[in-house]
Length: 259
Image 1: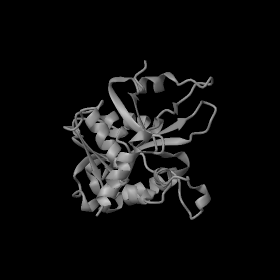
Image 2 (image 1 turned 135 degrees about the vertical axis):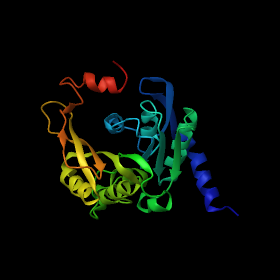
Image 3 (image 1 turned 180 degrees about the vertical axis):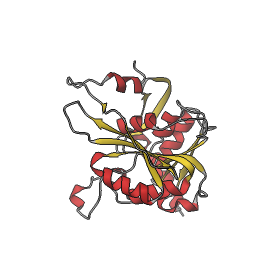
Image 4 (image 1 turned 90 degrees about the horizontal axis):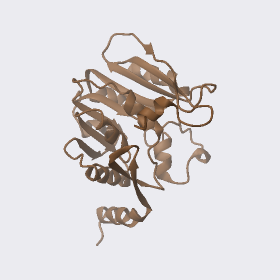
């Protein structure tokens, strides 16, 4: 008899043929396994990993919705803190675990399969100094025509399995007093984000608007708040991703380690 766990492992094994292993940005000592039918890491993960405030007090960091483990990998270049990534999709969990092993990060990074909406079943409250996330961006209001043909891409991009409030609520639960919550999201969701952060006692502390080029409106925002902090918000200078000729700006190239 084939168990459900056996079927899952069979599916994971069968689909290794869809994978590629590529160099990880300019880190000559790191590689990443990705699949062409699952969401691959994007510039959003690079931006948010650089935006997170890192200091000596940040000893335990949680990545909500880690995918194939890209944010923990990026953070491992900035900090020696313990990092946990939680992910609900089996194949993404498998990819993340193998990426951590491939890059010899097992002593620093742990990958957990779990549902963020039930985070209390996996972790005790106030157990992390920082929470970071690159969540699904798009609201789902029942129109299936807006969804991707592949369920796994739909779950990564649209609020089907989890929504913005679920993410922020989980972040607040996990954070210690004065711990940081750091998120990348769509600029047009800013008001929703601010209201929910306030609702769950996370005080917004810094925001940066990200523009494709200087003459374009911001599409992406980077936002960080602090649990239980006093009010006081800093709007940082805008971040431009591309020059007018389409090439990456110097700031982005520095994040990629190419300058």
